[in-house]
Each structure stands twice: as C-alpha cells, then as structure tokens.
Length: 267
Image (tube, rainbow, N blue to C red; front, side, top):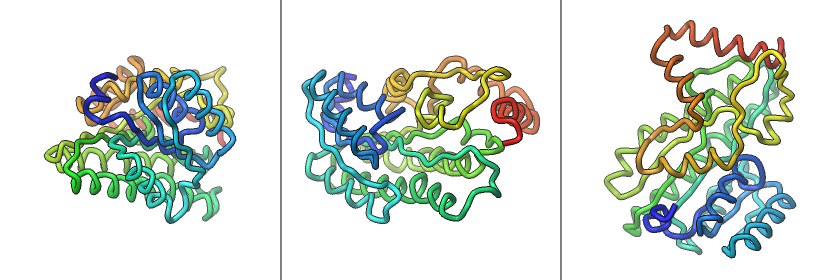
C-alpha cells in the first residue's frame, strides 16, 4: 500500500462506496493512509462509513450523494477529483438483478447500461484525459465479475456489461501505460455483500467460495500496475483457469449454468 500512495498520491475516488465491496475498498485504503472521495446513492450508509473511517484512520473524506445512473454523474465526480488532485479511481458500482432476461423491464435494462457502462466509460475517459493533460501518473481499477468471463443464465445483462469492463481495461492498458497510467480490472467472484444476499441463493446444493469484501479489495489493489486482469481468491483462480483453459467452452458454460440452477432454481 505504501507504494500505491507514492505512485498515485493520497486521494482516491471510490464510485459505489457505501456498502459491500465499495465499503471494503474504502476501509482497506483508509487503513493505509488514503483520503477517500466516496460516491454513492445511499447517503445514510455512506455518511456512517465516512465517519467511521475518519475516526479510526484519521484520514479525510468527501461524500458525494449521487445516483451513478444520472447523465451528469461522471461530470460531478470529476469536479471532486479536480478539487482534490485525485489520481486513483476505483469503479465498484454495479447494477445487478438475478432474473430471466425477458422478465426485466426497460427501466431495469437501462439501469445496467447507465451504471455499468455509460457512467463508467465517461468517468474513465474524463479521469484519464485529466491525468494526461496534467502529465500526472495515476491508476484506475474497474470491478468486474467472473460472470464477465463466462456468462451464466439469469444474469445475462449483468454478465455482458461486466465483460465490457474487462475488454475496456484490456484495450486501454497499452494506450494509458505510455502516459504513466495503470489500469486493471478485478474479476471478483462471490462476495459477501448486501446485494448478493438479497438475491437469496440456495447454498444447500451449491456453495461457491464466498469472500469478504476487504480481502478482495486488498488483492485488487496489490495487482494494480502488475496485472491487467486479476481474480481474487485462490479457489476462484484455479476454477477459472480450468474452465477457461482446460475444457471446451461449451462444457464450461454448462458447468456454470448448472451452478446457477442449483443456487436459483428455474428463477
């Protein structure tokens, strides 16, 4: 972590900061000396978290009560970034629903596009453009999902938007590297978050490796500047090495889809 503050400064923006994995990033980074620009729609949870990390870690926080689906969300974030000279950004926010694709309404489909792709894309563009213009080094972490590597049923749109994050980081890595900007994408597996537990998985028949948010955040931060794509959790890395490299793609899809059936039935 000390090397991170030396390279990226002591301010970081966390989009989707109030709970779950975003909270894990905030706590992990604050414990290691980062001041945090926290962005989330859940103002009460975000303000409570901000107070906690200020008290426990003696760092500064800025709270932006903001809907990341809003058309001007990236613009509002960039104002805070410029004000603090922030050079590290973590985009954790993700719209997620476990449901059959055809059961989703257009508003829900737009939620996937707005939060998972449009605001993310605008913020990465604005953040990297600002760093290049000021000739400063910086870092970007995008939080994706194992679902972006093999798309499971019942999370089709989520998986597609998370695959977008993976390909964006991969494509931008060389472009941004020449300017001293590191970008990586964290393909998280199952993480113990409110969103995951609200999906009500049946863990009697199938129990994935469930990680706590802070170890996931710590691993993702440790890989920035070292790997473009990382998978937290040794079991997850072993499983997905097998799925992606050792068996045919059709069989990998079948195994992943069978796991979804075990956890969510016919949905």
